[in-house]
Image (cartoon, rainbow over all chains, first blue to last red; front, side, top):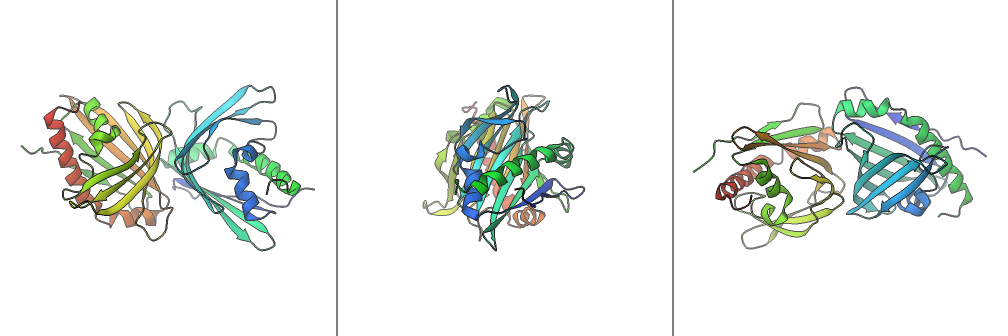
Length: 166
Length: 166
């Protein structure tokens, strides 16, 4: 059974930020845990045909993380890392994020993920990323992340339906 | 002897970022260390009539920090914390920053500090902060941080003239 939840992306022209909004048919605690617990995160983040491998995930205020997106054979396709500013269950995660595959390092974003309760045990997730420049934001938008995002969210929909991760 | 170095602040209207640019009459390694080594940082950061106290300063990629600005009697006036994304000597520090005294938490910035070599063993420091909103940026600009910044920089000028911290 597939959910009808759609991903909404807001990227105003000339701004150095983006909002990615998605609802889930599961209670806030379950959705928050799916983001904050690396043992669950590793099961859904990334495109359909990829797997996530975690090198380090200190899921707490003042922690840090590094992970890889790999193909089905386990070969690393991309690496990401960041520092975790705040983890406040079940409402907010604030962290930095960097894709290590760019020609130069330092194109970091500040990502705030807000988890809001909706009626009927549903949850709204708003991921707000601010970039070091409008150019950085536009480059990310043009890199085709939307497909991978949506595929990851659909994996998360399925996990949440199992109701074993709340 | 006082330096003639001036602080330049660039805050374009309707942007959620600010640049703070300052030059120092000292080589890049010395200036970088004054920012990256908490034992030196504690000697200069903050307004003239204040002292800095460090609770934690893990000055490395993936570290975190928390410190206080206190009056001369040691009473805490303000607390700050953040997560450190990258420390690359002697050229760059990227970290989050939060003033804990605001009415609500989460008004975090992403700060990138770039250290550039200038002729005659001088150094240009560009601190670039991106905010979660234009409103956050404007509130910070109106809070009167400029005086404290300049007083801190003058303390750093004096430390660098001692030439004991390179």
